[in-house]
Image (cartoon, rainbow, N blue to C red):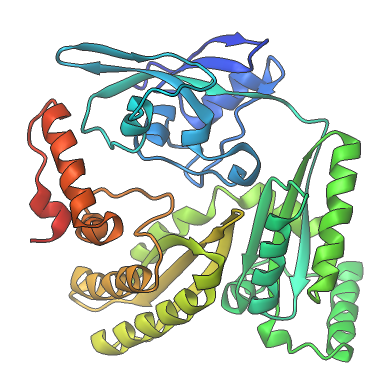
Length: 394
């Protein structure tokens, strides 16, 4: 499949590109960019994952606020099964259903092998910027993201880190020297005068793409909202650094493992009204789990994707493990996932189901929904080995 790595053609009138499913992120963007186009899909795994994998796992990217997730981007596809090739034509919309396209997206390889995908592509924007902002508290940052989602602004990225992740970001950044150090010191004094508790400060990144006029208009709209929620802009510098390093962060997990640390992530989505209670319970559940396994753990969070009705919260946790690393990990992971379900979130926002999240799927879609899913998969799975026991945890 890795040899199927080409952009086959681009329908410039429709903004549709036929791409082989084995193409990795850099393959896709390099070939599209050469002709003035972009797919706009940038998951954390961009440099090492494939288009077929994105479709099979229902992936979301860092710029999904603007371009949508892979389910929005995928317009058609080809999938090989023992009984032939399934062809989903790339049409703008259709009233026939249930949607076979939707059934294949997120099917995680159970229905066949995806070999080709037709995706929506966009002209490379005239201007692209990621600006950094600071909020006095996590609650203020969440409120601002909600207000931006409800406004006429159309940013490409909306991200805000809680105080713990913000502290980690500053602690692991290069030391400021010279003029930069003086500017940072001045900013800290200014915020203290304003009454900020710097230990609760939260860092945010917001991206803008489009024509100069469109970007300028959106920056002004967002700036007003951020100011209303007590935040301030801190310019392009931190955003440029974030943009450069955005694909490196996930691989810190392997570094931690090499040094005796267990680290991983769990993410969920929930309505705006449930985000703060969910966030609070996840922290409480994770800390109870750390106590249970007898370790001092770390948990951080950020909001990574915004929607009109809610958002994705992305949690990173880590601890120094003992001899039973997997056993300790399972206790912490289970506590966090249980909290997602208990507080009205989904089992996963963009990391799929697989084996690890399968025990929570029945709670996520309800048992009747799981039964319906089981029937569809039993009849369609070419291997005929779908095991509902793995999904229900029974």
